[in-house]
Image (cartoon, rainbow, N blue to C red; front, side):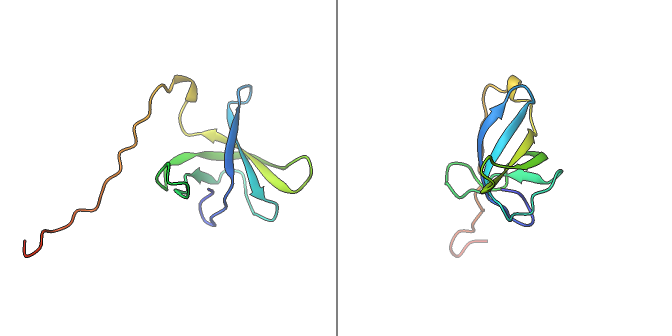
Length: 99
């Protein structure tokens, strides 16, 4: 998902030569620009929303002109990444009748 305005698509691949993620299935009318931040949307329930993925470096149309494809430079070096832990903080609640 691209931040402000929210634009949805899917990360579906990695170009090893360029070192970029392939952000695909972006609506053709979406105004995606170089430099925009891409983060997780949280829609699938697998990852929480708001995790930084990277920044858009290039935008083009798919081979049929029906959707857009953005190249995204990852915010981390994926070649050195072996494990990732996502810790989700839950909101603190006060006990009934407590402080």
